[in-house]
Picture 1 (cartoon, rainbow, N blue to C red):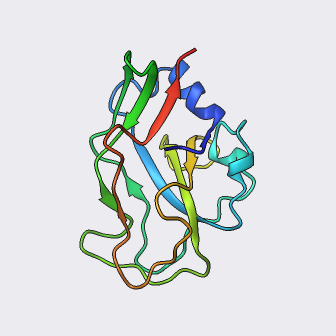
Picture 2: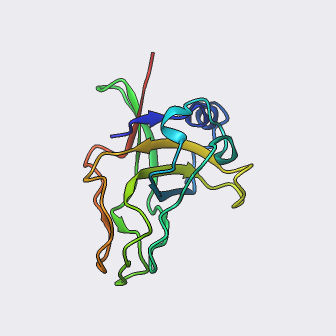
Picture 3: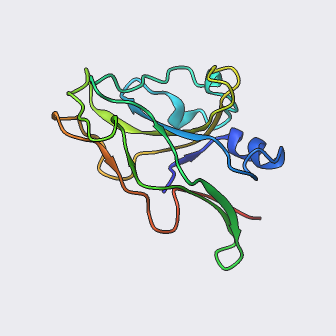
Length: 151
């Protein structure tokens, strides 16, 4: 599903940061996001402009039941988590100042862009869109959200 796998994904893998109940989060991003062409990013601070969605009621997702495992049949590492919403439970989001163009997946370390690790970016799943006073639901592919092919 991921369009861009950041260098931070490989860094987190080598450092063992994805091995045991990682704190993974998702942000919706708007058109000024530059990360799609910044594959060398390790930390969020390495992405020139994040441009997080700004509709009222929106909140990033703190992914639940995160698993990261090697699938020998597919010869790839798969990162997966539960479906969720980009709003408080049962809430809605107003339109943002711009369309959401994709999702940024990152490993939460301490809440600072200099330390949180960029993992992946995707435009898959109905982008671009803008909230229309509805819940913004995320349904994760049954085989996972992000994949890293083994060599």
